[in-house]
Length: 280
Image 1 (cartoon, one colour):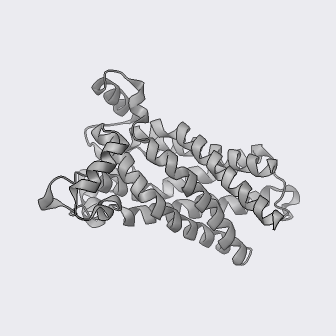
Image 2 (tube, helix red, strand yellow):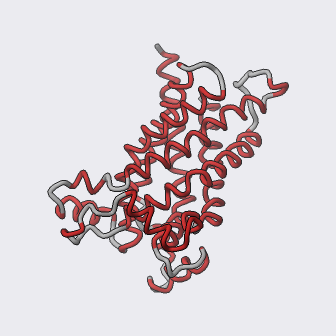
């Protein structure tokens, strides 16, 4: 019993520390990404960053707008992501297919936590309001606030499923292979290997899931004040609108700069997580 308790304590502490560290590092670049995805007039990350600063009296805190929901949700989300992945992987054959399947399932579970947090975050980033104000306004605006909070959930299911499949599933396989001789002894790997592998899988996962992220940002960033159009921004409509802006390349607008953010966030998350587990 003590062994199980220690294991779950390590998972929770590790996931919490990893989530907080990665959110604090990555949120400013996420703010720039969301503005790039939702504003056709912005051409690149530098343009978006400069535009944000100019419109907010050169206050750098604008890049941290809307950080509270993802910071709080990251504690639950990362615990769920790592715990579900480990549980599902242990119940499946020790294979690449098993690891990738565990990643997809972990991502789907995570999406139920991240969708409402992302909705509040994106509305806050785009409208310049506090997360609390967005939450209160959303709760009062509609007869079905839960539907609004879960706007963009289909796109987020795709994003989280694809991302975690590559990020954790591929990471697990490469981590095993990185151990001396490829013997499968998965208990000892250096932080340098952790950083290199998680940077690779995090970057690949972000590129693979980015079109879903763009659709999600457009869907969740749309206004919900027009009752006539309430609920009209569907996955299909967002997909069509993005494609009409600039073809299929538009789904990857801002991907280059935000991939570096993804590499920074995912490698930091995994280094902190693995370090905490090793400490326990």
